[in-house]
Image 1 (cartoon, rainbow, N blue to C red):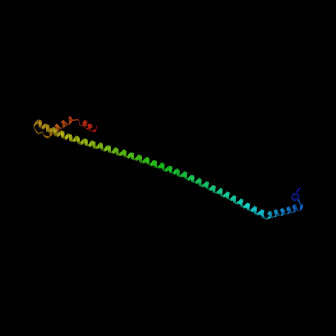
Image 2: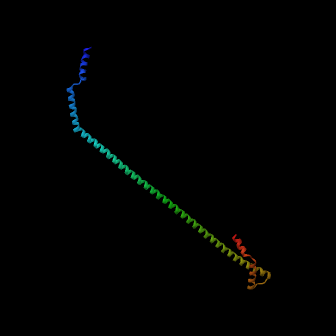
Image 3: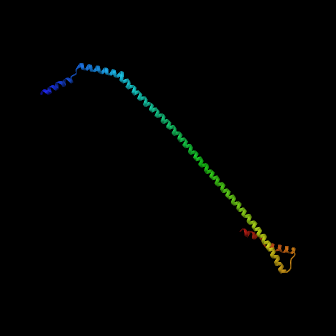
Length: 183
């Protein structure tokens, strides 16, 4: 074997083989370290973990409250939206009813005016027909008197004139003339 290898193998043996004194001191230092950690570090770590846990729980509680409030606001919003839609539907329905009533009233008023105008036109036609018949009667009477005077070559007295006019007028059918005017 080589002398350098022999030196290395001897020192490696010492590291692998347990030394009781070093082990005891290692265990004592380890125990002291645990006691120091137990008294100083672990309470601070536990306190920090507790604070962190409380902060997370508070955040979760706050998030739950915010969600509950958001749900409540959403519910209120939906209720108000539903009410607004209902009111809008009522307004539209009232507007339609008002429009229907206004349309009915307008149609009724137009019908009434048309009937009034037609009635007035009928009255005007009847009055015009009566006036025309009166004019025709007067003309017929005048023509009858003139024709009689020319035929008889004499002037008739008023009783004769009246009798001749009545005879001429009775021969004319004024009712038929009036119905022809209407047709």
